[in-house]
Amino acid sequence: MLLPALLAVVALGWIVGWVTNSGKSELSLIAFALTAIFVNLYFSYLEKKGFILEDERTLRINEIASRRTLQITSISLAVAMLLLSGKLSDPKMEGAFLTAGLVLAVMLTLHLLFRHYYSRVI
Image (cartoon, rainbow, N blue to C red; front, side, top):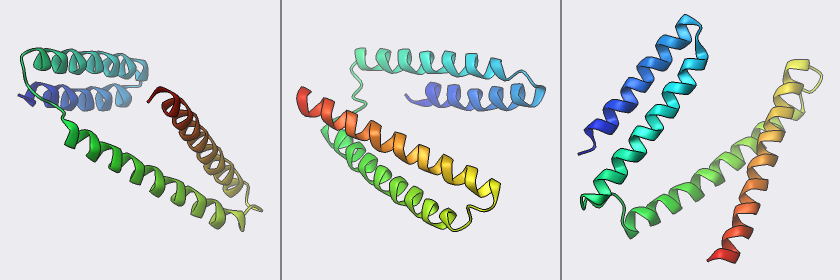
């Protein structure tokens, strides 16, 4: 039942590799959008047919996995910033430090905004 979605994602990978190699990277965005629309419509079709794609257990597993991913990513970025802070004399390292700091700040800000939003909605 999930084979068409898997084939669409494999085809997307092939198309992105081909168009990136040929220098037409804008086509990869179009291919990505079309694949996302196809997979979304296909999963909607399966749900209307009565297939259960997610249940409470799956949602709980996704919540735990998302929380753990956020924790590991935050800690990894913080450690990277600590390691890079000693090498700020190198311009390449300064750019990496700023990038890691910006990604960490954006990620934590989004996390706080989502927590605030969902604390009001739920």
